[in-house]
Image 1: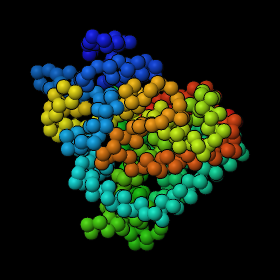
Image 2: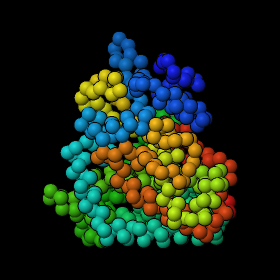
Image 3: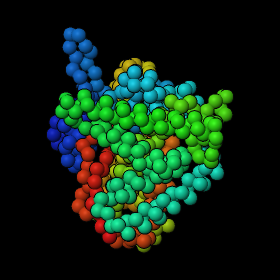
Length: 421
């Protein structure tokens, strides 16, 4: 437990970011804990595993300030992504079997894969994707009006990014229900504290789902190599950069990243946004009065306020000094994006929801550097298009009650959000 210094507010309660119980506290208590940690001069170390005679202690330094998260994000030579940015880090056998996700790679391999992916996003493909977002959003609102579903998450928030990514990749319609089922199986229990029996069973269930999904995508990749079409899979497997495109395993790993990262994060931002615009009627009225003026600002503020991804970790590739604290090679730091997005040094009145906030240097898509989110533009387009369609056709749409959140140290996940119009 860190000690407070002169002029530092005392912590509201014992703070232990490594304890799964912390992530089951009410959001207000978590926010108070991060306010306290931001008030300290140096990053605090939290032990995940105590030391002993036969093992070294293991833990991480918590980077909770905006400036520190940005500095670590933009210095990959010191703050490395390998062997993994998630908790726990992927096991070697899992990486060997499924391939390395781009988020867990460093240069030069990360740069090579990112160039292949970036080259595949041609202006023609981007134009088609933007058209498809509008068509999918319109169809979703049509179905909401026709069927009046009660839960915003499956009916709207999850449906839009999933259908957009499948359309962009060129996934046939008949395969999409099965892929969606595998995505749910792979990501359902991320970041949860579960009984031992479930901790043993659920990773196996998630890995089987991931394997099925990657086999389906690898088969599509082989088919597109033989008969390419005008979609992202064809572009990725036939990209000519250094004489190659993505292998089947790399394609599967990239598709998994798109689905789990792209669908989950956009889904959660959309759900949080509907609720924020419901419980802040003055901001909702501002948006409805002039959507073209305020829609961009609303999206940035929703992403800042919700921060769909809570944390990523980095491993020190060299000794480093940060705010007077010596970080040793091999040690871990965790970048807490949600805390950085409430940093009082950057955001006046940081807990307020203000769609006119300017500037809004939110870190919901990362802190910059080589791992800045590849899908940031796509996510922004999805949020803007869906909210424009929704509030134009159903201006009285609103959430009913608070969102049902999933206790997680990794993402700000919404399981369910009741809504009406």
